[in-house]
Amino acid sequence: MTENVTLLVYDITMGMAKGMSMMLIGQQIDAVYHTSLVVYGREYYFGGGICNNAPKSTPYGKPIQEIPLGQTELPKE
Image (tube, rainbow, N blue to C red; front, side, top):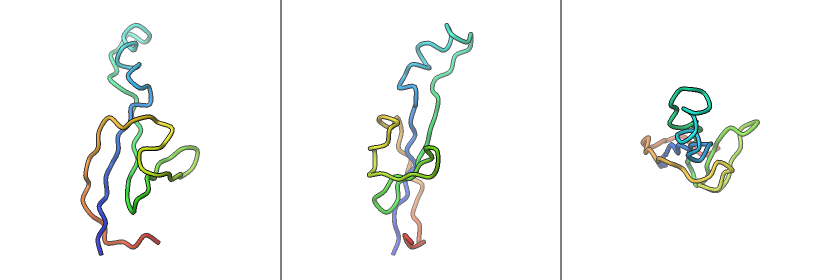
């Protein structure tokens, strides 16, 4: 049995880095990225420890990109 694995990419500034970084730090930064993995119907991410939630329900907002990584043959356990 195989299971799809997807990387979700978030901008934890929700767009503010792109709009305000030049003014605040004198350098253009498009985003402050945070990532998570979705596998076996759960989203796994670091949030002061390894956490998991239903996919796309983390405190980091809406993902800006979803990248399929392939499949795993490892069991959920």
